Image (cartoon, rainbow, N blue to C red; front, top):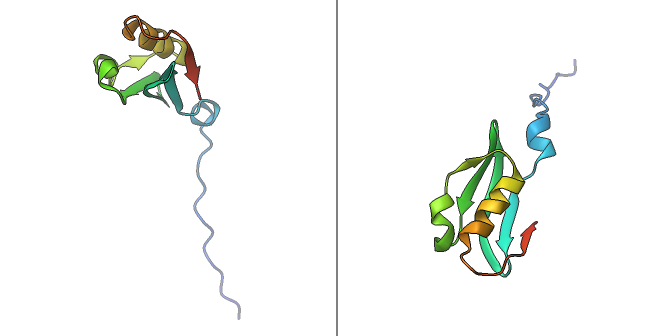
Length: 83
């Protein structure tokens, strides 16, 4: 008699997580940090001391993270690239 194997547990589809990947935020040649989607917005994690003031902050969108990082760059390059 063949034995039945348990199927792998199903994981719930989370449209918020799947629709908004984590982004690397760069200001010119400087990596400011990463923007991680979570329920209620996008959380920023700094990777460069100049952006530590934004570390852990929750924003409403990637665009708001980018704007805050540009404002924080204090006269540095203004070009933002979310990868």
